[in-house]
Length: 336
Ligand code: SF4
Ligand code: MG
Image (cartoon, rainbow, N blue to C red; front, side, top):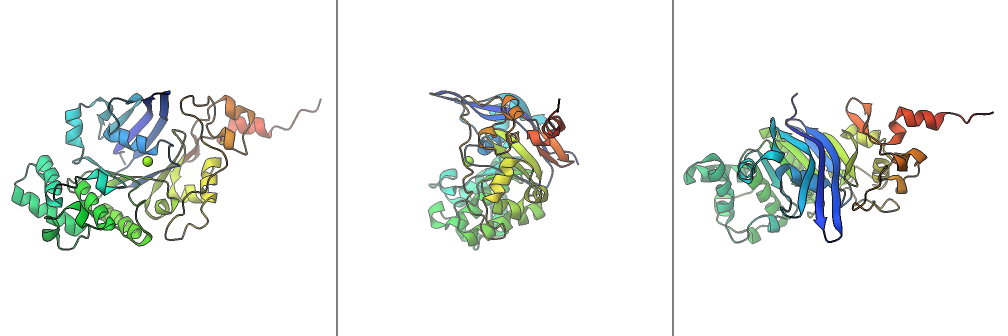
């Protein structure tokens, strides 16, 4: 099927007092209609920046897409004006954040916030917008929607706030939902309910989801495909099955080894792999994981490994996957 979203060789930099941070370094991926793509990795790996780049929700003066393309339904998003982007946000691509309290306006009723989007995007009357708002609150499992519309954010529990944010994001019937750590602040039971809600929304509306998370337990429950990011790059990508059962990149293997059990209710926080990610002011020329990798070869720190196919749906950017390095690696020493 035709991809809905195609990100190609995306580079994003941030200006800081210390210099330019290369937060995203050549990220490529596609998102197909109706699927859930998870982007996983430790904090600072560039997963949120990648997702926010799609909606151009990055700090205007300090961040810059320096290279690459983001195509959505055939349109080049990196070229859109702020006005065009505003029309796209909410109606075509919507974002869900970890914390509803900071993402939504606590001084405006829930009803006004949800109806505002409907009226703006669909140009409907207030009465019709109100009807749709009630319907959406029902869909996301909020009881007494008529009453709830008149309330403020602080009158809702954590789980209900998250449902509310999902309702506001979904009410414009976008084709893509980008959810950045949507369940991280929630307790186990509520987290499971929110995951079910995403699945239900996807079944009923066919929406595609990009899920940003550090929680592999959540990934196992909801995603179809996974991109593993490290130091601003995608180091491995594949179906959930491939990534969980046949991980190829030493970093992915390390991540998986750090979760004791995948079938627990909540994936445990990732136990640290020894060492730290490289400095993205001056990223290494070769593999960014080399300093932490027990398989590192000479070629690894000299040249950057390129994404190499493992299967038709599975790639790893690691020299161990590259037949040239493998040959060199496996050639027995010459006896002269
Ligand atoms: Fe390890 Fe080399 Fe693969 Fe990087 S390219 S993950 S250093 S084996
Ligand atoms: Mg983040």
